[in-house]
Length: 193
Image 1 (tube, rainbow, N blue to C red):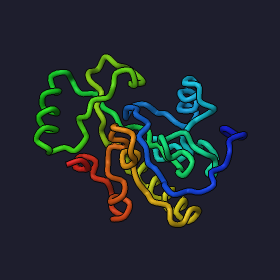
Image 2: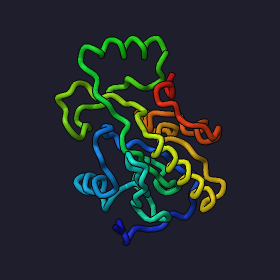
Image 3: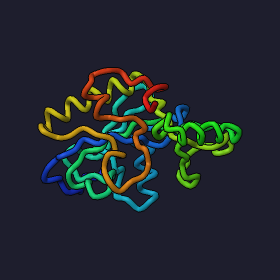
Image 4: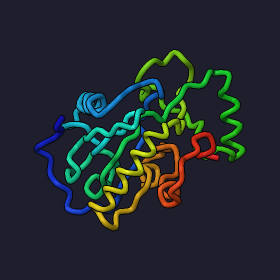
């Protein structure tokens, strides 16, 4: 599917930005779903340039060279890839455990609570929190996609949405720079310790 064929092209690409789609592990979402969500907010089309589904399948969003709508103040100099997932529910009784862990500094940003207005999907399961629940297939596709983008945009800096000023969310819920630089798998359960 082609999105936003009338969008202006970026003049430069300084950043390759990784995002979470802020969905749950059991939600099989892709570019068409996010396009629908973004259009419902009045956007021209999907804001990301690509989406990686839970099974590792890559789906193109905006054209690679188009100006994105995915990171405030950097849409004109970045390309954005979203990973399906990034959220999980915890029971209300688990809230204290996560609060204590965050206060103790044992978990950087997991346990950060998502604004209930942003939750897409069933909301009766408990409290939505950020969680780096990405699959090995997604991370493999992400690494391949970033490698391809670095060939297309030499010198671009690879980082997570959270690394750019202006947003307090922990998106994408892991530290992208060292993960990519170290060429190692993300250990989801320890990624935020």
